[in-house]
Each structure stands twice: as structure tokens, then as C-alpha cells.
Picture (spheres, rainbow, N blue to C red):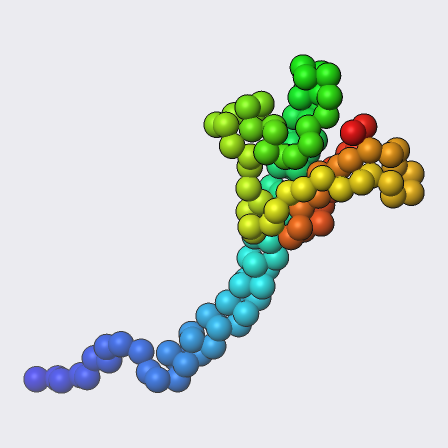
Length: 121
């Protein structure tokens, strides 16, 4: 009878190599994932602030005046609520007197600082 030992499983060295490779891949992937997620949140915030700016224009056409607060836009927005910044920033009006912009107001996010087009207000 010829008895050969059959090896089952992995050696400790092989497991350590696999764990090291997974660690390197995670070290590369996790920061990229976080950057992508933050960029997506900033883009969504900019999209919401642009929506509020366009809604302010619609408000002014219908009411013959510009809204004094963002809450005034609620009836003009779907779902009867003001969209929220994905990172809990607060939208507000700021003066649009930066260089190259006409006087008026623009939507500004306290978290991302993204400001949309100026409208006369």
C-alpha cells in the first residue's frame, strides 16, 4: 500500500501574501471611492442650488416679485419641500455682486459654497 500525504488548504505564507495584496488594493480603492462619493454629493448640491435658482425665476414670473426666503419656493417645488444638501448644508440667498456678475441674489450652500446663477432680486 502506497500512502501519499495529500496537502489540503493553504500555508501561512500564502495566506499572508493574499492578505497583503487585499490590503494594497483596499489602500488604493478606498480613497478613490471616498473622493468619488464626495464629488457626487457636490454635484447633487449644485444641481439643487440650480433648481432653486430656476424656481426663483418661476416664482417671480407668477408673483411679480422675487421670493424673500427659500421657504417661499415650497409651493413651486415637487413634493412641497425644499431640497436638502446631501451633506446637510443650508441653502440661502446671497448678494450676487462678485466681479462679472450682475447685482441680484444667488443660491448659496453653506457646506459646499456652490453658488448658482444670479437672478435679479
